Structures are given as structure tokens and as C-alpha cells.
Image 1 (cartoon, rainbow over the protein chains, first blue to last red):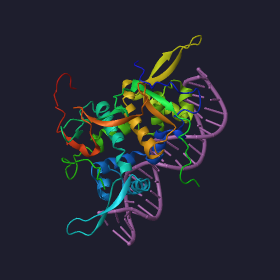
Image 2 (tube, rainbow over the protein chains, first blue to last red; image 1 turned 90 degrees about the horizontal axis):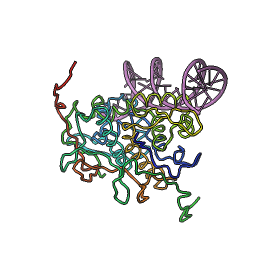
Image 3 (tube, rainbow over the protein chains, first blue to last red; image 1 turned 90 degrees about the vertical axis):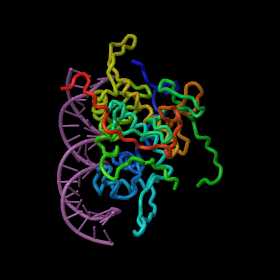
Image 4 (cartoon, chains in turn green, cyan, yellow, purple; image 1 turned 45 degrees about the vertical axis):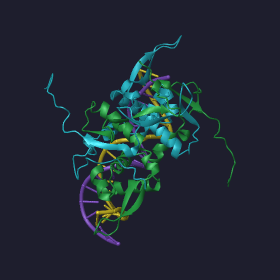
Length: 171
Length: 171
DNA sequence: CAGGATCCCTAAGGATACTG
DNA sequence: CAGTATCCTTAGGGATCCTG
């Protein structure tokens, strides 16, 4: 009823919309992290897991898939290996988020917020909170000018080409 | 290196963390919308698609999956059917986002922002923009107190029970 | 502890053809 | 136009066992 759809001022009748998967950032994101288990592993990395068995136990997935997804996430550059040494132990390798991976945090938080609201009716057993004040953290929409934006204030703008400057090196 | 992990002040050594899928809002969200095609359809509903063939064409998926996912999304309450009438045409049924569905918009926008940055290096063919000023819209983290939050300012807080008031009706 | 190797099952998804 | 029905292929994921 509220027609919460984007203002499609620029959506042409066919082709060329941002929707076309090849050009859609969201669709392309799914090519990189397309599975539920990948998100579970990102969640655990975000929550502080570093060791293989932590990922397996906390994400509640089997070793083979954990190994496969972790490798994919490392290859995709969202996780990286790093050596750590616990006192009196031999050096080990762990996984941690890269910048590329931690940039998924808004996605994770938005998902958590949605699930909290629509699955747990706001009564999930835990909240992602602001360290400073303890209040729940959500992902809100804001434009680069700093304005708060509602879904109804959105529009889709298409570009012809990304400038196409043949600057430095072109093979 | 920047250790962009959540401050896990309250994460116990085992069990009981929010991570446990049964209690994790994110994992539960995936139970509702767990597939790539479901997200593509939500994207198209968000972009203004209403008719079955629009979903099929724009999301670039086959009719059978479109039918299946649309039905699931309607059953899950993210989409609803509605009758519309184009002048001179017979009445038809379309799909549109409910409040529950449009509350996924921050997730979609966060995904688009990620893909734009990390897949298209900021040069995607289109941007989700603020109608008012035209600037790109992103999903940013903010707490209920209104503070801007960075991933490093996050912590996980667990609750015992959601109040558990046996108020009105309990079977 | 961190995985690799197998085997198996199911779900996701496309293609094609058909119907109300 | 809005789907269904059928068939097929692949990918996701668990279980179990084994290895560096």
C-alpha cells in the first residue's frame, strides 16, 4: 500500500537498467559470496573467530564446507591468513577479515536487524550494540551528502560510461 | 591488520552466543530468504516490477523458479498480491513489497554498495541515489541513540530472556 | 588441530513444453 | 499473460574416515 518501491525515474522499458545482473553490484556480490555458509563464516569472523575449529563449531557447519568456503573467502580477498602465537604454543595460522571483508559488516548488521525485527519480533537473544552507549545498532540509509534517506526517497541513476579515461596503463 | 572484529565482551567460550544459528537473526533471515534468486526478485520488486513477466525478464531467471520464489516470498509475507487495472484492460494481479519486504531495502542497498565498491571499484553503471540531492545512498551503521558507529565500535550483548511476561493468551 | 578424500543426498536452477 | 509440469544438471552441504 505504501508502495515502497524505488523511484524509477530512469528505468527504461527494457534492457540497460542497473538490474541487469552483469552490471548489478548486488548480483555480482552474490557471485563472490553467494551461499548461506559463507555468510555464517563472515559472521563468525566478525564475531572474532580465527581458528578453523571455531568456525566449524560456531557456524555449525561441517569441516569440508568450512574448508571450502574459507578458501573461497580467502581467494576472494574477504579473509586473510595470519600467523598468531599463543604463549607456550607453536605458531599457528588463523583467519581474519580484510578491509574488503569487514566492509560486509553493514550487510550483516542489516540482516541481523531485519531478522531481529521480523523473525524475533524485536526480542532476539542478543543485540549488536554500540560500545559507547549500549544501544542497538542498525544499518540506516544515508546519502553522501549526509541526508537521512527513506526507501521512498531513492532513485536509480544510470551512467553511460565510467569516464573511460585511458590514463596510465592499458593492455 | 585493523582487526575489524566485533568487541566480544560477552562472548562465552562456548554455546550461548548469538552466533548459534537458532538464535541468530541473520541465520534466521536466511531461512526466509536464502537464495540468490529471491534477492534478485526483491531487487526487482524494489525497482518497481509488479508483473510476473517483468520479474522473469529483469531478474533473468526462468519462469519455474520465478513462480516458486514469488510464491515463497508471498507466503513469507515479503510480497503481496494486489489487483491493478490498466485503462482498457481487464483487472490483473501484481506483486509488490509489503512493509516486511521493504524492510529488506537496507540489506539490498548495503549489498549494492559493497558490490559497487569491491566489484566495480566504485564505477558501477548505476547508483542508488537520493531523490533530493542526487548523491549516492549507502547503508551506514547507527545506534538507536543516533550515534554514527564504525565496525570497531560494535559489541555483542546477550539477554537472558525476552522478559517472558505471560501476559494475554498462552496456550 | 587443520584439514583432505569420499560418498551421498537435497535443493537450486535452467530448458522446454503445455494450460487457464 | 501467468503460470504448471517435466526433466535434467549442478552446486551446496552433511557424514564419515583418514592424514600432515
